[in-house]
Image 1 (cartoon, helix red, strand yellow):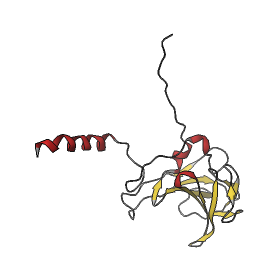
Image 2: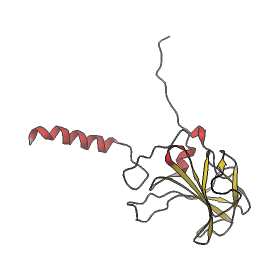
Image 3: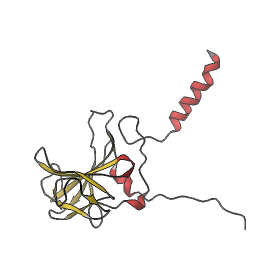
Image 4: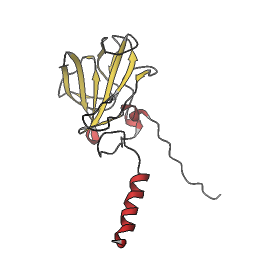
Length: 171
């Protein structure tokens, strides 16, 4: 029994030191490099409500970020991909795009100008923002979501600038 203790301790240390995922479940929080992504609304982003990871798959949380805007504002594809859905869900217009690395972004409420099966490029219009998002403190809010499989991720992580420090070299 004592021989197994170091292995258990090592597993505990790895679990404690591992990065905390922003998803419910065991999926990693990795998102591709920021250079391949752009904000879904033009101008400076105003986060009205941030992402709140659920404790478990069906638990409470906010599975996206609400971005304040104005009705009629163009909504842009955050990255290159293929539109997999553009239509109504529970009475609200939604656009969903599949991207590389198994990522899917969603945008609502958005009156689509694209259709399912259409390829889109980063920064290209996918629709216009519609007013009527419940709980929005301004004229209109875009609910921007990000998933990998069934795991919700914080879409704002797509926009984080990553800094890589290089070692100093002797001169």
